[in-house]
Every structure is written in structure tokens, then in C-alpha cells.
Length: 79
Image 1 (tube, rainbow, N blue to C red):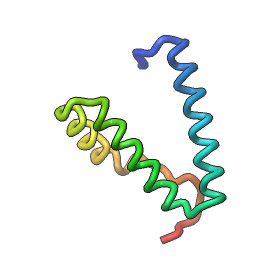
Image 2: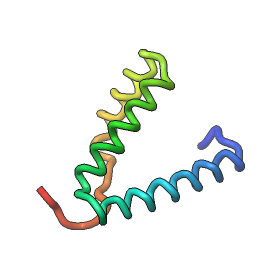
Image 3: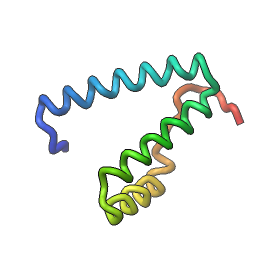
């Protein structure tokens, strides 16, 4: 259940579509690991800026607990 309003959900969906389509394009232009590393670095910096130290640590701990929930973008293993 989301705490977002319908308008906020639409904004999130629009941002997701723009960012995801950009990421897929960048992966066709650059090595996907370079794209992922840069996106992760940017995301962590934004979270570190916006969250308190306690919230940031809780966020990182949550990410570690969800490690098995992440699915690959496409089939095939590069490593």
C-alpha cells in the first residue's frame, strides 16, 4: 500500500520511465557496469544528502536484506 497520492504516483511513474529509458540507452552506448556504477554512486549521494545519518544507515541495511529480491534486466550472465 502506497502513501502517495494519485498525482505523486504519476510523477514517480513518469520519472521512472524517463530514467529507465535513459539507462537502457546508456547501456547501449557504454558498458553496463559503468552505467550501473555511476547510477549507484549518484543515487547513494542523493540518499546521503536527503536522509539523516540514521535513515541512511537504515536504508543501506534494508538494501542488503533485499539483495535476493533484485532481478536482472535481461537473461544471460555477463560474469
